[in-house]
Structure formats: structure tokens, C-alpha cells
Image (cartoon, rainbow, N blue to C red; front, side, top):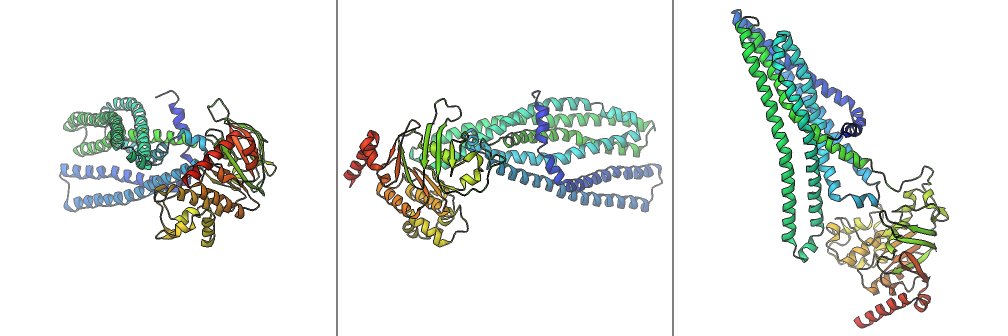
Amino acid sequence: MTKNTPAYSLQSLALLLPYFRRYGLRLAGGVAALLAVDFLQLWTPRIIKRAVDELGQGTATGPGLLRYAALVLLLAAGIAVCRFVWRYLILGFSRFLERDLRDLLLSHLLTLDRIFFQRHTAGELMALTTNDLAAVQLASGMGLIALVDAVVMTLAALAFMAYIHPLLTLIAVAPMPVLVISTRMLSARMHNRFKKVQEQFEKLTEFARSTLSTIGLIKAYTQEGPQTELFGRMGEDYIRNNLKLAMVQGILSPFSGLIANCCLLLVLFFGGRLTIQGIISVGDFVAFVSYLFMLTWPMMALGWVANLFQRGATSLGRLERILREKPVLEDRPEAATAPAVAGHITLRHLSFRYPGQTSPALDDISLEIKPGILGVVGRSGSGKTTLCHILTRLYPVADNMFLLDGRDVNGLSLAAVRGAIAYVPQDILLFSETIQFNIAMGRANAAMAEIEEAARAAAIHHEIMSLPEGYQTRVGERGVKLSGGQRQRIALARALLLGRPIIIIDDGLSAVDMETEQAIIRSMASCLQGRTCIVVSHRVAPLADAGEILVMEQGRIAARGNHDFLFANNDFYAKIYTHQASARGNKG
């Protein structure tokens, strides 16, 4: 372990304190039931001692032995009831804790921005919500039970043993310091090796996820064999790391048993001599051995408990590390939550550089965007998508560089700004649900007539109605049952249904033909009266009817104006338009 490990563990454990307080009564009841079980177990050898002593002295009677048997049965019944209670309460607490931590993790992840998700893979986050949370649950449930039980049983058994014969008790526990020292040494290795196991599990999860999500591409390039081979190698690494962890566990548990048996051997030798000499009675010897057996379980469980807590502490540290992440974009205390938005956007000398990049993605952009359709064209990497990301508040900007209706966006809440914008990105994401669900995702209470109207504006209604189940057709994972153009138009209908004052389409119609794209833009012009619509496209012709068009180059606005002006004054625009118009004519 590193020097910072203890402090780091305490910092991680602080994450659990609110939940221990929230479920304090449940835990108290569970611990009380657990202590009752321990007390009843500790009392059983006392009854057996009396019965054995009476048998040895020849004073035992049938009714007396029957009374002892009834007491043992009564204690067993009490143990069974109390054991059920502590299992229900404490193991239930661990499940509630797991649920609450999962909810906390997901809600926190939803607050983080793109920069975080560029640094962490989906596989890593999936591992946190599965393996790591399970490890914390086990440590907080069975681990907590075993720890309390072991401490109480150890102290109580030692007290009863010392009451019978103090010196024999010291002899019996003489090997225990060796177990304590070895457990501490092995626990440090267990922590590091379990951390490697979890990291390898992240890689396996991410690889499986990416393979399934790109299965079409893998089959198209006949990469089934290489993918299987690579997954197999990763699985071998995972097994190898698990075996290294199992090696530590395999040493710790048997070693605990060895120490326990050494204690028993000492008791049999020295305790047997004391019994022969008459210093302790046969009943005392039987009770002492019974208490030693009770003490043996905590000794043998020490390795298991250490394993559970090391796994739990490692996983809790990983969770705590994610929960300490802060979004780059956060609302200021004075941020307005519900501004009236008319769709007037102002950019003043806007510049932006991605983290870790030296050259700016956007460089000194000044622009007024008023209600109407604004087209944006440019080469790949010219800054079109970055501009869309800035406008949708996915990245931070300096004060007074981006104004919405004359108000600095840094003085508005993120929810207020994003709630005024409907965004259709390049990468279309659909849920494995019905078409109706996907269109109405942002407005779950939208009427069917409104959904159909949005679909008509996106030129997808008739194609939806031609499907066997119409709007109730399930689209499959990421919309796999639909064509690229259909997915894009459903996403566009989803944005139009929101009815927000600003709509941004970032090359979101690239999969439809040029004529359809142009028809959709013209259709939107009629239903977006008084609203601002920004359309990014790699095709120029569909933007010919836009009120203004921007030509971007190397993060700057190289030219701006309507179609006729740009065709006459900008070589890039004229060349692209001529080439695309010629290609369309030849195709026709």
C-alpha cells in the first residue's frame, strides 16, 4: 500500500456515512439481533458443562437431562429467529445501500459533460455499476456481519475461557499474533491485485460493448476471427489476474485454519493435562473446547473478512473517484433559470480550443443570428460541429462571448439555455423502442396528432405508415431496423416536436438524398416562422433558400451572405455548388 492509502480509504468511507445514518434504526436492530445470536451461542456451552459435570459426578437424573435438552432446543430456536432477523435487516441494508449508490452514481454521471466521457469508457462505467457496487454491497452486508460477529465472539469467548482458566487461555491464543501480522501483509497485496482485476474487467466490458455495437462493421470486414482471438487474449489476462488474487486468498484462508488448529492442539495437550490433574473439571474442559471452536471461526473468517473489506474498499475508492469528478460547465449561483428566449444569438470574438490542443477550433468569430434559417458550410475540420457544440452549451466559453437575447449565457442556467434549443447531431441515437416513443422522447405527453405533424414536417410520416405497425414499430438497438435516412428524419421530427425557439441541425440530413434534404428544409421554413434554425450541411444546394449562409474555414468565418452573393464572390462555395449540381444532373 502507498502512504496515502489510509487517508484515501477514510475519504472513501465518508461516502457511506449518510447511508449508515439514514438506515441507522435498521442497522441497530440487525446488530442487536446479531448480538443476541452470539449471546445465545455462548450460553449453550455453559448448559453442556453442567450436564457433563453432573454425569461425571453421578448426580445426573433423567428429568434433569431432559431439562438441559429443552434449554438447548430453546436456545437453538432463539438463535434461528434472531439469525433470520439480522439477515433480513443487515443484508437488506446492504441492498438498499447498493441501490442508493447506483442511483447516486447515475444521477452524478448525468451531470457530467463531454470532457469527462472522452476520458472514461462506457465499459469502465458499466464495471462500476456492476462489479464494484457488488463488492461494496458484500462488504457492507456480509462483511459487516462477519466483522461484528468475529469481534463480539472473540471477546466473549476469550472472557468465558479466561473465567474457566486464564493461563490455558493465554496458551490457546499464543499463535494469534502470527495470524494478525500475516493478514495485514497479505491484505496489502490483495488490494493491489483486486484493483488490477477490476481494471481488466473494465477492458473486457468495453470490448464486448463496442463489439456488439459495431457488429455490422465487424461482419462486413470479416473480422469475427480476429475479434474473437483478441477477446480470448483479454479473457486470459483477466483469468491470470484473478489467479494471482486467488493465490493470496488461497494462502490467507488455509493459514487461518492452520493457526486455529494449532490453538486447538495446544488446548488438547495442556487442557487435557489440567483435566487429568483435576485442576479443571471435565465439564470445564468440554466448555473450553466449545468456546475455542467458537473462537476458531472468527480466526478462520479473518482472511475472508479481510478479503471482503479489501475488495469493498478498492471498489469504494473507484466509485468515490468518479463521484469527485466535477463538470467543467456548472451553473453560477446567480444564474437565471427560466429566461424568455426569442432565438436571437450573438457571438462576440468567440474563440475556443479543445483541452490539450494548441490550435483553436474556433478563432475570433463574431456573428448575429436572428430568427430564420442560417446555413453553415465548410470543409471537414473547419469548425462547424464545434460551433454547434458551443451553441448547445456542451463546452464552456468566456464571459460576454456568447449572448442569448442579449444576455450572457454564463449568467443563465444550463437547463434554461439547453431547454431553448433542439439539437439534431451528426450521430443519430435512437432507443430500442417504438417510433412513437423515439419521436416523443422530449415530450412524453405529446398528442398523436402533434407527433404525426412533426413526422410530416420531417418527410417521414408516409414511410412510417407503410411499416406493418406504423408508429408502434420497434426500431431495434440504435434504430438498426431503419435506414440511415429514416433514423435522421425521426431524430429531426423529435427536435421539431419540442417546439423550441432554436433548432440546430448538425449535418443531420446527410443520409437522405439532396432533393429530400432541400424539400425538408423548405418544409421547415414554413413551420418555423419566428424561430431560429441553423442547418450545417456538407451539401450546398439544399441551403440555397436559406436567408444567410456561412462559409467556415480553419475555425473562422471565411465568407457570409445569401446564395447568389456567395456563388459570385466565394470560390470555394461556387466550386462546391457547381460540382454538386453537376453530379446531380449527371445522376438524373
